[in-house]
Amino acid sequence: MADRKVLAGARVVLPTGIVDNGRVIVENGRIAEVTPAGPPGNPEPSGPTGVRSGAPARAAAQAGTAQATGGHTPADAPGAPDVDLTGYWVVPGFVDMHNHGGGGASFTSGTVEEVLKGVHTHRLHGTTTVVASTVTGEMDFLAHRAGELSELAEQGDIAGIHFEGPFISPCRKGAHSEALLRDPDPAEVRKLVDAARGHARMVTLATELPGGIDSVRLLAEHGVIAAIGHTDATYEQTVEAIDAGATVATHLYNAMPALGHRAPGPIAALLEDERVTVELINDGTHLHPAALELAFHHAGPDRVAFITDAMDAAGFGDGVYHLGPLEVEVREGVARLVEGGSIAGSTLTLDTAFKRAATIDGLPVESIVRAVSANPAKLLGVEDKVGSLEPGKDADLVVLDRAFTLVGVMRKGEWVIEPQLG
Image 1 (cartoon, rainbow, N blue to C red):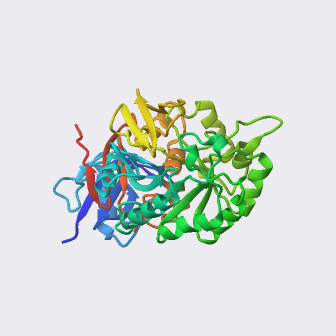
Image 2: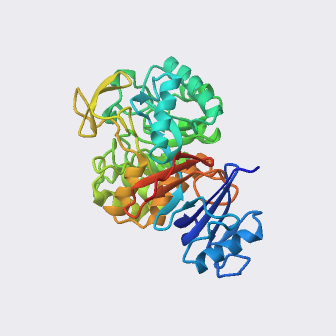
Image 3: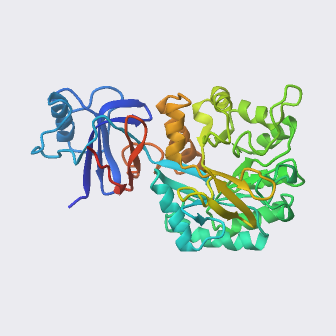
């Protein structure tokens, strides 16, 4: 007997647009069909947004019946919806490509059980695909850690590994230990990539440092994202790195020179180049709303990826934590180094970033979905499985209410949070 779930009545966000009164059919952990309600008796969904994948024709006819009965399939009809989501949104599961931990657990130093706890914490907030990010440490430690995390990637618990440091600028170190920083020697970069056993997804570099450009080329040759970040580069140096193969801006604006009218620096180069996707931390602390609007205006919705840059305290609470060897105090949800006061990652979860984008920043829902799901999935090379609601992909989805508050999360067809609808 196939495991089959029918979700009906929601506003469903597809790559082609928003479908009102949509129907999502899940079978054996994958999306089998996504359709709008068609006219009564019509065996095929009407309009360009209806898509099907080997589902029986009666499903479309039932969708038509649902429209004729006010958006509900009769309870005794075959294929009646398991969940009536009328008045809710259904969007793809979130994809976080830059995340250091959560739930009190660190992806850099936690045990396997702690890492899984952090992953689960973010799943509860809609992130069904997460890359584990490390922070600056000794090379041997990072290589050993990459081996441990690669096992979780092989099991499907994480989507890969992101090395943020140690190849970054001491001028823009942020919450990284200056004593452990080093120039991006391609041989050492290769050591980390090899230690990850094919699961290295991204390395953040200050590409203006000695060896930076050669390291970018090495990463590009091995199919690993070279991300420009924690950098003191000039505009011209940034252009050179992009031409060498860098394709991501690590948390744009943060840990890099500010935009200047005579010395535009890396921000201008990263925003203007169509080959670059810019990460944004939309928590109200890292970015002013005007800076976020500027990024969307110049880069466009296809070149923005919302990230959390979360540390242990995400989904856990205020207190004292460690980010690598550095002590961090979290107060009222803002993480700062105890010594020096630099912002030390975030306590953000992507459901909060989504809600803020919709209700405060006023972004179109379709653009938010690209930033939080489709764009990072494409960058990570997993868009064939996740990042959008299309037949054949994993049934990873998030249910939001009218106020864009998360009420349900599904991963691979199983409810992580089952909607409790009144």
